[in-house]
Image (cartoon, rainbow, N blue to C red; front, side):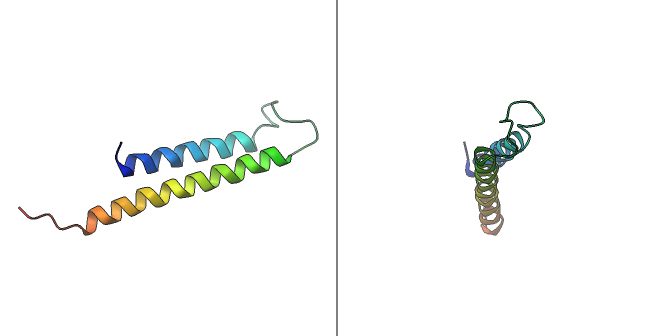
Length: 71
């Protein structure tokens, strides 16, 4: 898997993790005492993973654009 695909895969995984963590209560899977620490941690970790993935994909795309290909 190249760097760009890895980056986008991490973005998708992070967004899904953050959304599932945030929506545990409405889905009936969370604790009854509201938005808890585990949910908050899941959202934060998901966002961090998504941002790292975006940085990897963006950096790879940027380095590909600045590379001069000689024929």
